[in-house]
Amino acid sequence: MKDYHINIFYSEEDGGYVADIPDLKACSAFGQTPDEALKEVQRARKAWLEAARKEGKPIPKARYRPAVYQLAS
Image (cartoon, rainbow, N blue to C red; front, side, top):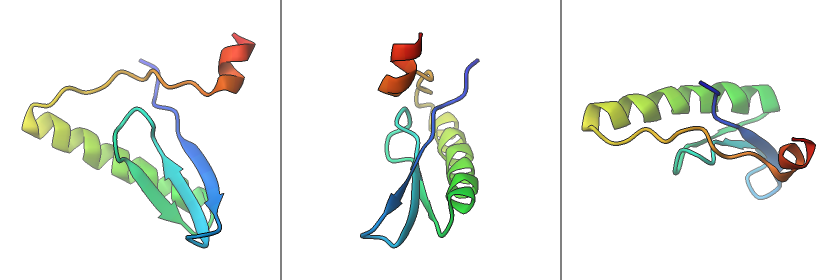
């Protein structure tokens, strides 16, 4: 199984880095550095998946691919 794509970007408004997983609705995290944001979103992903399983909700397949990867395929 392929893993979920993670976007990490700097947010001027928040004054730090935001990481999100497009395939998992509302799964995002914040950090002062890109590494910190990545670690936090990995924790958020684990919690998101555990909560979905516990509630019997479907787990989305990893589908999101940024345009740059689509062009390289």
